[in-house]
Image (tube, rainbow, N blue to C red; front, side, top):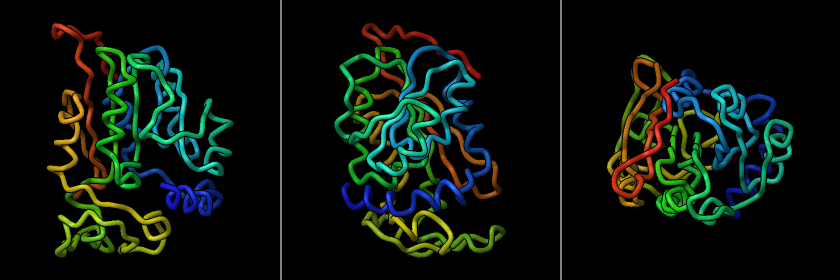
Length: 228
């Protein structure tokens, strides 16, 4: 994780200046999170680019990240802390909502992060994951021509790599670890989170894939979160 932190510290100025959110990302986040009140923690908040979407739904966004320089930009957009997502600095059953946006490929220990999410969520609390699509994005997918994505062997290779079809993105600068669809989806119930809904990006071949999961209440009752 120290290597990831250093890499994001190095690109923080470029990221804030140049990086544009993927089409449909805010829509997916809003659709699956829905309206609510209370704290909503963003894991790996980066520069805080998603805080306004969370706030517009009625939640109070807070964020954490490992990169000090990324947090320097986020600090003006939401309250932040520097922390490791595998060891969240929150008490058990303390948060009504947690989100993770475009960071799971930065986290080789993502199953451990999901276990921490379940620990800190209140019974009935909601977790929203938005990430790159496990089937159509990765070191094995050449998206240079949006009309004809070329898939090559390597889908099951989850090793860390900077291989990318473009030299203008985050992956070629920082690196990433691919999570095949079955590993990603199985990690939620294995962490004790109940899968509820899914979403995909608006592109003909989606760039993003999203999940809403929940920490169940004892006896099966849960606190409702209204749809957006």
